[in-house]
Length: 235
Image 1 (cartoon, helix red, strand yellow):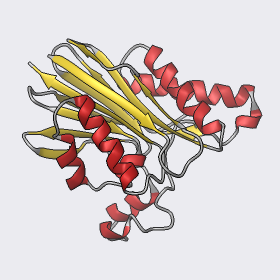
Image 2 (cartoon, helix red, strand yellow):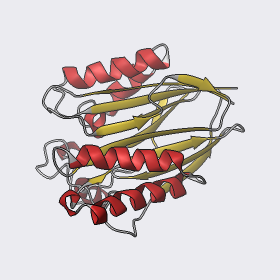
Image 3 (spheres, one colour):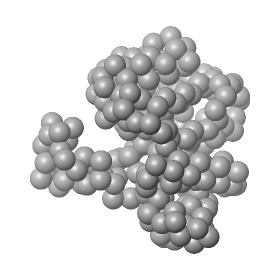
C-alpha cells in the first residue's frame, strides 16, 4: 500500500497555549510502515503541553504494536511526574495508528482524540470517546443530541498519566485502496459535526482537507486547540 499524509495544528480562537501535539509534523508519502499520532494534553497551562509532547515522543520512538507504543507514552508521562511533582495531574489523550506495507491498520487509543475512516463516501468513527458523556449515552442515560451542551462534556474517564496501569482501546483492520483516514483532537470533533466532517474530509488532497477542517473548527468558534492528520491510502 501507499500512504500520503498531511497534518496541522492551530491554537484556535480562544486558548492562549497549544497543548496538542502530533507526529509526523512534516507531510509525506511512504509505502509503509507509517506511524501517525495525535495527542491533546491536559493539566494546566504548561503541564498539558508537556504531557502531550512527552507521550508522542515516547510512542513514536518505541517499538512494537500501537498499543505497546501508547503504553510507552504512558510510562514516560508517569515517570516525568515522579521526577517533578509540580507536574502532578497532567495527562494527555493519545490516538496512534501504524499502517503496514501490506495494508494492515493497527490502531490504539485513549481519551477523546478521534480516528475516522472515510470509505466509499461513508464516514466511520473508529474510536470511542473515553468521556463521561459518552458513557452516559452508551448507558441510555443521555440523549446524543444533548452531548454538545452538557456541562461535563469535556470530562475524560481515561487518559495517559492516570497511573502505571491504563486501559487502552485497540482496533485492527485492513486499509483499502481509496480509503482516507482522519486523526484529530476534540478541537475539531467538538466544533464540527460528523456530516460536515465527512463532506470536508472528501475535499481534494490531504493537505487541502487538513486546512479545510481546521478552518471549519475555527469558523465554528475555535474554542479549543485543533489538530488534524489526513492520510490517503492507494494500492
